[in-house]
Length: 125
Image 1: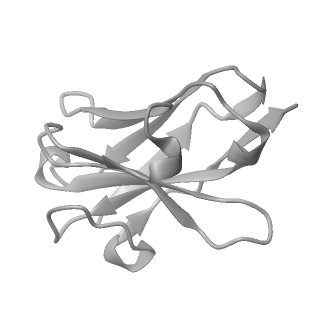
Image 2 (image 1 turned 180 degrees about the vertical axis):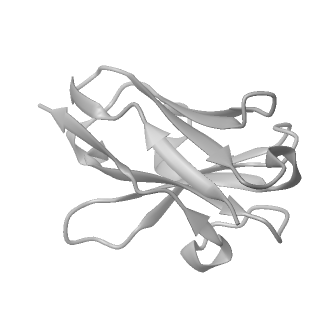
């Protein structure tokens, strides 16, 4: 079992920045990959970013490249999502998720076994 708790969401103006955090517990954090997803009202949950177990490899959705950065601190059991140059279309609930089984650029919701409760990010124009 893995428990995930996100924090750091909020209201920000377009062009601003936020850093989301996701604290993990229950299994050895460095033994699994982590991802961030988001879901806007009326839309499907979509992939944002993924980071390998060691933190050395990262993957991003094309629309987030250059604006978002995923990182992890295995000593603190925490994964982060730094979001810069935010746009109103980035408004969504952001979820962190744990992938205990796979490697590589896994982007599908079904490939992640554990999920946090989500944190709301609202970007005003």
